[in-house]
Amino acid sequence: MSVITAVTAQNSQGVFAVQDISVDIIQKQIEVIFDDIFVDATKIGMVSKTETIKAIADTLSKYKINNLVVDPVMVSKSGFHLLQPDAKETLINHLFPITTVVTPNIPEAEVITGLEIQNLNDIEKAAKIIYKMGPKYVLVKGGHMEGEALDVLYDGQKFNYYNSPRINSKNTHGTGCTLSSAIASNLGKGLSVTESIEKAKIYITLAIENSFPIGKGVGPVHHFYELYK
Ligand SMILES: Nc1ncnc2c1ncn2[C@@H]1O[C@H](COP(=O)(O)OP(=O)(O)O)[C@@H](O)[C@H]1O
Ligand SMILES: Cc1ncc(COP(=O)(O)OP(=O)(O)O)c(N)n1
Image (cartoon, rainbow, N blue to C red; front, top):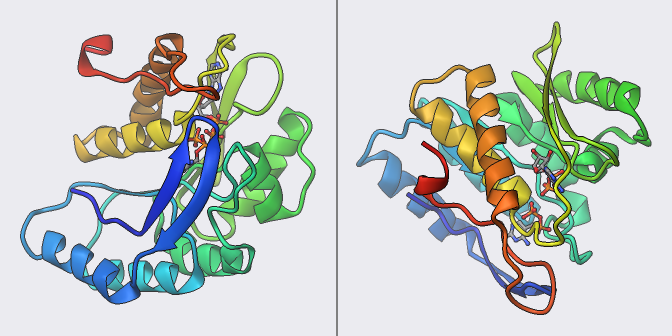
């Protein structure tokens, strides 16, 4: 079930425009879903602006939500601000405290923490800082580093590492969105956080391996159930 928070005009070459959905209709979309059907897990992606984030956090808090995965989408690959810069604090203060797993990529972890991230030590430092902002688990994704694609999970006490060879593909549109959705789906199926990430990592790796060059820019990852059983 989906709740539309904004409509984007985008293609493989970039994001060109955004129309935010009004706060009232976002709240209503959430309410009619939660009033009707049991929600096993929720994933939040692009939320755009302060009012939207507050509406989502307030409305979700009226329900007993399980398994909230927040992908703190900030700037698209093409450089478009999908989260308005002044909404960063609201994202941290209103959503992180009710989040099960937050999944920043390296540039997002840098913006959230103010650190410059160049190596594993920096990633671990950033994960510890983000953990103190309230989520139960922090997964810093390593897609923007060099070398192997290493994602680092911190649970407040220890680190877990999820590694895969780097795939030489320019068609990586949707990697972060796919990973966070796969984690949420696995949590909804009742898997633990570590199992959910382990399986989601296998899934995204297969989806990148099978990505395809459609359009003039960054093509999409390819996900379909047959890839992953
Ligand atoms: N070229 C690649 N080869 C293998 N895995 C990748 C590659 N690029 C990204 N990933 C993986 O895809 C997932 C999304 O990571 P990332 O690209 O950092 O997030 P985002 O899409 O939010 O920028 C992570 O599991 C990351 O390790
Ligand atoms: C609606 C929407 N959400 C997120 C993005 C980010 O896309 P991209 O920059 O390609 O990064 P990932 O999809 O790999 O996380 C977007 N363009 N639109």
